[in-house]
Amino acid sequence: MNRFDMFREAGNPMFNDNKLKLGIFGPNVSNSCSMTVADTTFKSDFETNVKIAQMMEQNGYECIVPVARWRGFGGPSNFNGNCMEAYTWAAAIAAVTEKIYLFCTSHVPTMHPIVASKMLSTIDDISNGRIGLNTVVGWFPKEMEMFNGKKMDHEKGYRYATEWLEVVLRMWSEQYFDHKGEFFEIKDGWQEPKPSQNPRPVLISAGTSPRGRNFAAKYTDFNFGYIESMEQAAEWTNYIKKLAWEEYKREINTFTTGFVVCRPTEKEANEFYDYYVREQGDWEVANIICDMFGIESGSHSQEYLKKAREKFIAGWGGWPLVGTPEQVAQKLIDISNAGVSGSLVSFLDYEQEMPYFNENVLPLLEQAGVRNPVKETPDKNKSSKTANLVG
Image (tube, rainbow, N blue to C red; front, top):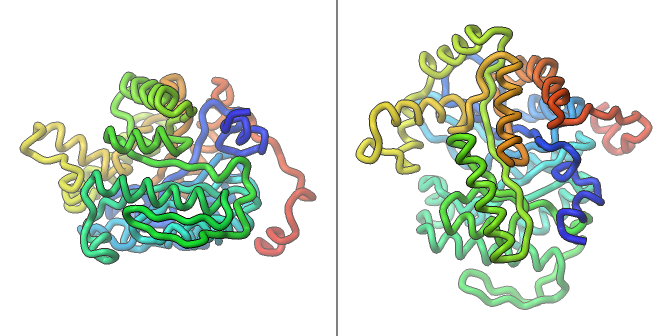
């Protein structure tokens, strides 16, 4: 039995029968994915996150991926400046949910792998096997300067991430091991409890460079990436699957993200997009982030720069899911038809906008056959521990 079959047999939501998996991105940070000063009821606090997570469970979403953030980016919005730490967030959300799969996003230079492996195993117990790991090398210089003086260069960063993850995997599967590498030296490595999941917690990473994709192909179950076109999405998916199989005899899937502006008419959707992106967008912080990613005026036309910054303001550079319910559903179906396993989605205002998306877009995805109807879970199946916690 291969790894993916083990996940399916264990009932892991990330490997269920839905052709298109759905999750959300970044509910633990202020503004979530929207770089704007537009009005919103969204708050990156625990109470709001619980409401969102439970709404997602009622509608059959598969996962939540938090952002690992240690400081804001500046600009009028100080984008992501108010942020809940991802491991603590995951433990708390795990205790008040039943079905949804949660990820810890971890900047590997900020935490020792022994600490990370133990924390993940603890959350695995709290969640009854619903925790995964999203590894990030660490790319925001001001954050990395808070921890170790400076951001590592690209190649060194991936050497560090590789050794870090190998230590975590050994902590989860071995007893009393020694390790001596470039970055870590461990004597009699040991951990109990081990994760309960079979074969282990789900691993994802967002590397898009050749080095990053090789890391994903060798170790992870999902390569997270951004879509530029449906043709590019198919090419990326085919490439990473081929790389994983030919180099490491492993299976891998792809996952992307998109921002949602869904309204009864196309005109209403476009008007709201114009409001929160073009009128109220935090262009200063978009410039800061695009410059960090190398999207600079010397390499691109002004029209390209404007569109790139708009996508970052609208939803961290994700794929635009803007329009009527029928249009938004079709765009998600197109993603699925390109071979991508699923998409995280983001909203400017989750509590105000997600219910409309759930009521009007999800049924269209079911009709198209990319998602199945949600199965009701009888209350008697709810654990007493969680039932007490949620009142």
